[in-house]
Picture 1 (cartoon, one colour):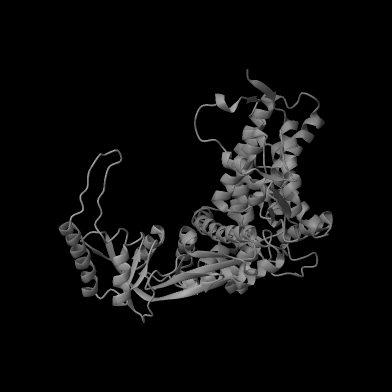
Picture 2 (cartoon, helix red, strand yellow):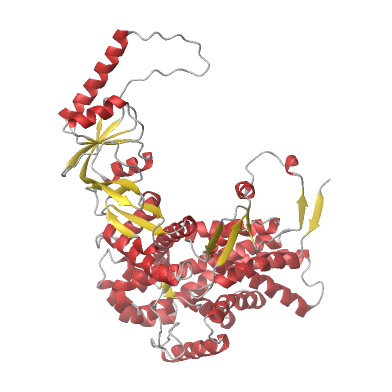
Length: 594
């Protein structure tokens, strides 16, 4: 028998509201952390939104659906997971309040489905129009005047704005410095977009986690750090010719499983084997090879040969790291088996990180990027995992921002609103002529791709949705506009600033901006226009994607009519969602249950 559970708006709101109670306490730079405990007594303290939600032991299927939507959004932008839950809960509350105003029966199952479709349709066109024609021009003009003078710190402001709400204040300062240093050393002031794409794609291979050390010990090391020590180590001065091999040098006898064979080891067979191996190793000396990098364990005779010939040998290297070395270096492939590649190394060395010793390989890259390794340290494994997750998220966010610049520029070229036309020739064209092709950050600023953090995007979108009557149904726009304020309202609650006073000052400045068409709008710089903290920026495209993702999740929630509970044995075979989490038995004091 199937057990059927009717799904109402109140059920969805109860589930999402429980998640909201968890994440709202750790929103923003001044938010707190959540303590998780395992049955074994192990604890985890974190304020990273995605980690908080994925660590919860969620039993209700609606909660699991929300978590699936959050993870899908985070995979694209790596940002906004806590704001996702706040905005989703505020939308559900807005729909409930609207139903109360219109009387009972206003939001039946059919009405809920139509409302979900209307909200989703709002994100397809109307939302794009508001952001492209209203928010982006304001962001472009404001940042062109107030931020571009600090061009060198645009990256610092983006990184600082991203990590401020995910780690502690002391840790954020160290992490911001190290991540920016990592970026600059890899890019060498060359193409920023290429650098961000490279770091985003290869981050798992370009960082080394070290547990047991303070976060302040994090550093950037030149070269590629391999999480293995040298099997045979010899001090060598570069440049060095290295051999990359993915197989064993010695011939092997491959036997199919289940075959019944009898092998007689004869003296002449062993001799031929040694002769073949010696010939292969002799060929290496003829090629002046000083370093051998192997993805597999080599025979002991190879290690002895390396010691006698003073050849550095590194075994059991991750194949992905070897592939990266070959891709970023000038490579020659040898035709003789096993599969071998020749590369040139700038240097090879040993590095001591914590209680472990690793190999470090310096390369001569084909392009302009210089290979460096980001060493991330933390005193405990849980904190180390969080540090790695935040660091990787930084480059995912920057990658999404760089990719969105192209589409934003194409929208701008088709824009005809008077505000943009008035300043296009006087501000934007002049600034663009002074920008080099590598100045991606300058182009992002001019394209209106960033805004100061602190709810500025939400304030602007709220204002334009309510005051621009040319977009969509007024009731739909009002529900979304009011829900958007949940993010700045929660942020200002933690910082002890009066939300209504801040909103009043913001709207007053916005009105002055509209009247004078001048760059006097003090976005997020305090009620008196004086900033008491370093300027932090966030991506406009990331915020837009957040709103779209939330509306898509809302559509999924409101379209569910009933939940059918079945025994696991009756479900068709296939991958089970969150089965690993169930088996690990991760529990929290903040647990949503069905």
